[in-house]
Length: 377
Image 1 (tube, one colour):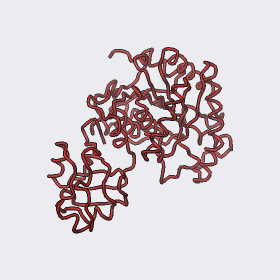
Image 2 (spheres, helix red, strand yellow):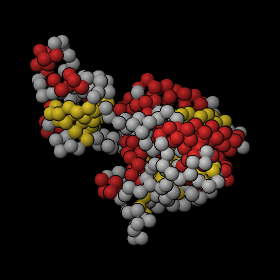
Image 3 (cartoon, one colour):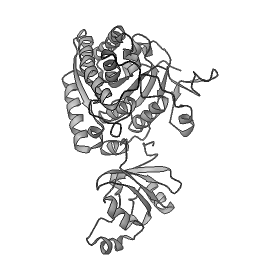
């Protein structure tokens, strides 16, 4: 395999896990952070724009507060995040300043990328930072996010940021140097995979479910991130961040797995729809509707067999085939209560049931992203 080169990419999102940045006994790993900042300095000097998605606020805060290894209550995690965020932001600012780079902290919640207006505002803010030659340092706002309303891991957040900003490449720095046919810690015969053309069920089966202690992620979440990123035309690399200067290690030919972007990527408005992490509801459709959707048609109420979830008009919902496979996502034209009432009805019957003239489609084709058209669920 030809060695990978980050110099071929103009806009790169780099995600750093908690375990890479924080030692539970000594706190922040400043030498490692400085080496990564050296890499970022070299890439920006070569003309690249770098966005950082940095975990570590809770892990750093719990070390600074002496909270030990015990499980934390939600309010304790949020307090740890409050302490860790300010320390982490200061460390990034100091490390990047050595290369005459200014950093800007962005703290996001799930709603900032799932709600269209806030998504556009976040994108505009980050775009402005990049135009000003600053390095955005992005993290989930763990001081206000709850277990019910959160990204759950920064791999998916990084993929969402990468697609939102039109990045050419997403680099996930991890405690493992790439994808293997099985978790290498459990299977000594696991084989390394240098390139993934497409994330298939067979590829997903290789992920296992293990995660390192200080992080919430694992190989499974990295593949979830890969589906979001590659479906929008962003390449992804998984490589070990445990070594010094981990980005330049890729340049030196150290082991890394490249996930190639889709040849038919979702773009623009539909990138936002496809990347929605938590659909507000689900519509189960019949075989005829599946065929219509795959041929590019709108979803009509007649093809809907079951409605679940408490969604409002304009929310993103998942569309399921009769065998429960998710085949598409789209912005629904009806509230859940009305969707239940008109499911299975012909278009000409809707007005009599609802009492007003309504849209003919449950989801219009312009608001639909079908699995396989640059979108992998």
